[in-house]
Image (cartoon, rainbow, N blue to C red; front, side, top):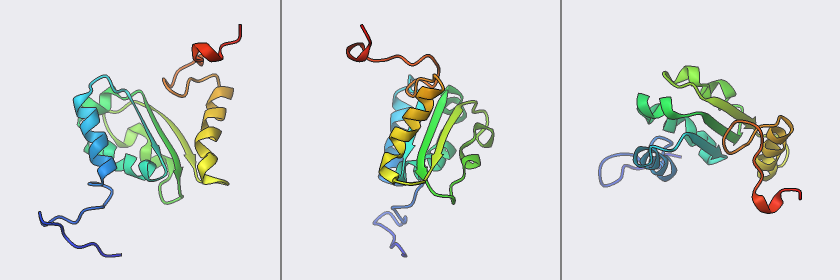
Length: 134
């Protein structure tokens, strides 16, 4: 599908200027406490562009990058921190397999078995107070 240029002369709707990519970059810029990024499906594809467009200082902050539900045309190696110096994040990656919509739960189950908190990227898992065993 060929896209026509917008009023500003740019072709919009590509991964580098999608609404999701631009919103994520704006959020990282305006919230210096952000140290983890998560992308599922289309957001997973956007992740590469987000990482490319972040500054060195922003990439240095990242501790965890999670990419879920992308196809073989976006291999795990595309998101490794070594491709985006000076990044040093841990990467959680789960490619498409089986039921696409169940992949986020599959990733959570995998990280739980490893004793890793899927939110912070470190262990042990911190359960919400209402779900803790009494």
